[in-house]
Image 1 (spheres, rainbow, N blue to C red):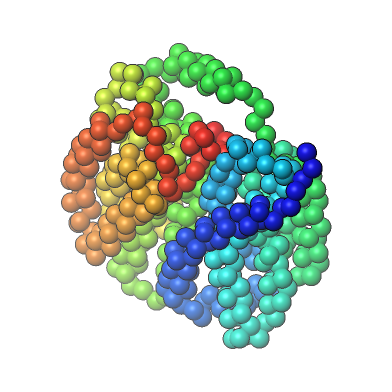
Image 2 (tube, rainbow, N blue to C red):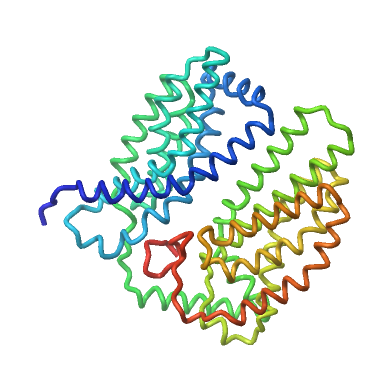
Length: 427
């Protein structure tokens, strides 16, 4: 069929990207503003200017991590339905893929604006030329969008696009030129969005076979934990990134201020508890998206209390690397954070059951609860025991929400499209 005008497709994808950019604008600007003034503007300006002046790959790596994080969150929403009815429209798969990449780039506008603003501030304060860095930001957005898209030749496209991300914002004209070349090569070799040729029945059969194998090899209550862990897989790394970012900000705050041992203790308690809360929030959101409640689970001989407790223990165990880092930063601050972990994990398990009714999914309320806990535990470390005492009540309330779920009813995931069987999502 002859391809018609792509203007309606461009308008559609730009509209999707713009809406996502507007939704992410406020939280990204709030976090950037808080980090900028919490760690002192002088520190940010000095580091940014030093990296801009020398043309460092470290600058490109940091910018790439920030851009890829936003792109990874925007990709499932933008790719919603791209393998459904839209395939019947007169446009090639290559056109869909390129326009989806542009939409993801538009969705990254808030973080790209923050990076551009920091570069302009470094120029105004230290007279460091930001031209190459500013020219590389659009390349960064396009390369990050291509890197997170599911395409036919992922093994070739992802390394090339990731290299283009790092080189594009390294503030050197040779790096920028190489980044443009790599992006062109990656675009030419990527192909269309990843096609699903296997029939739906075969996918169900494979899933049933894997489930049966799991049931035979692992007995008892471990099956529930294995199902949840298989739903997460390497996606759990995206939960560690914001948590490690909070710990990194805490470490910079401690190293760039003259504090007493007591103040250092309080700072690590606040940062550690907040990092645990951020991890629990993003992990709960992943579980809600990738392992939503389904009727088959109700046929197994597990109670609602068992399912809630299993999710809470799994989330708690996954925080072990974060606790180790807190121990290395300040060993005395570990006990308030560790005592506050059970209620945070229980609240995250509760939010898994109610994520579908909130615009921000399980992230928003878990983050608010964790922030309140971090502030109170920082001011009064003994408050961690009060939070610990609330754990049984949170588990009981979560079990009640689990019992009251109507798993056969379809609910739209307002916060994320992935996980919806009718949407574009790789499960």
